[in-house]
Amino acid sequence: SARCVPGALVFHAGTQRADDHVVTAGGRVLTVVGSGASHREAIDVAYRAAACIRFEGMQMRRDIGKKALVALGAP
Image 1: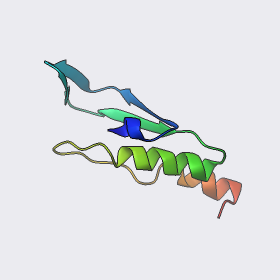
Image 2: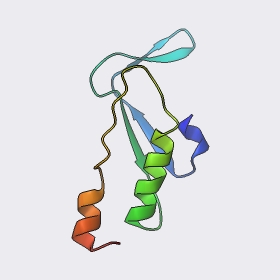
Image 3: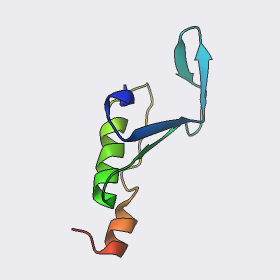
């Protein structure tokens, strides 16, 4: 569960509750965000949290935040 990553938040979009489970309902299912002392740290938190989430057919963008790092000249 992404709850194990401090500084991470998960926003549900294409999900619904089925009994005691959360299931996908199609489209963009979740948005995972992270907070940190720097942009790099926030990105790392978000991707660590996203790595805790698994479901069939899952796809994840891996470019989020890179434009900000380039614009800021971050290493």
